[in-house]
Image 1 (cartoon, rainbow, N blue to C red):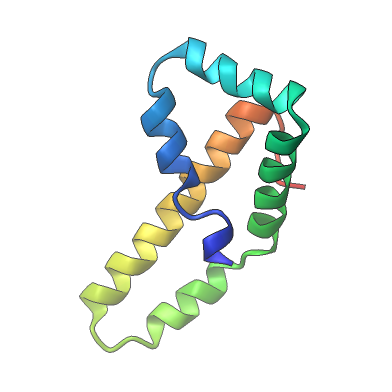
Image 2 (image 1 turned 30 degrees about the horizontal axis):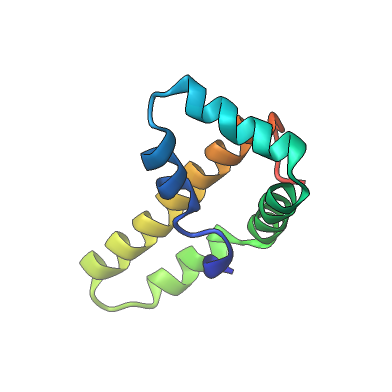
Length: 96
């Protein structure tokens, strides 16, 4: 399920940054534009189905521990970042 959400959090944070005006623009898009609301809703559904514990198990199968930890950390950090961005835009407190 990684392609359904991976990178969204980073992209939005880079665009909006510390600008409350840009964050408000995103909230307005979410409120007023059904397409944007649908994209974020679909992303949240994919994230809600994601099992990071399963990703952890797959990472444990990789012999090169450095590579395994680096890739797992990248995925887990982006998952959390994207979830927080979703919450900040939508005002929701969970993914479903």
